[in-house]
Image (cartoon, one colour):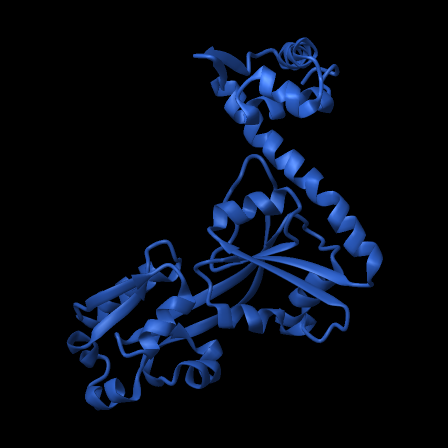
Length: 294
């Protein structure tokens, strides 16, 4: 990037792209059209690429402009949130912990992982759930302090990520009391006669569950697949089908979903990781979470 790169020029480009033309951007900025146009041209000159091109009576983004716009969105969205974040930090003593939660990881497990910090008197816990790639993007931009996942961090040439093992849990099968009674003593063969709920293939444990069925010689009647683990348990608790879950949260499963343990899923283990951008963790609350898992 040229040393002539200027964030003010980037801001003018960002407004032009959002407004779809120089005139509307000039009105929003309360500046002359010629001034705004000159500032955008200066940005294009410093970057070495055209970012906008004419389309009808307006302007559209070039391929380079799309990339520049995506990054500008991130930069200025963070900038817009800065005053509120600074005000909140100054107005009350708090220990802020922003956690990303992969939609594949059981939410009851997340609560267990966070247990070491929940008694912090000034804790301000912010949880974001989503797909792992999106959460890792937010982690790279320091919007998140840590990400919980069911798999280690993927290789990424743009950012160095570190995986901290948080523990493992054997899996077991759960179902409503009526389904457990109907299954009798024929576990695991009874699963061939029951409706079954499974996590979708985007979870790390799904492959291991499929292999387990194959080893048992069972062809399951799958009636539902869920990306969200809490949703899977909710439907399982309603009687839609038997479902697998980490035995780490056995007591919570029985208390919250009214189900019973049908039998073990021998050999299938779910892994849990905390992903971060630091080899030596500096955030005191993240450090406390990691120490709680050791």
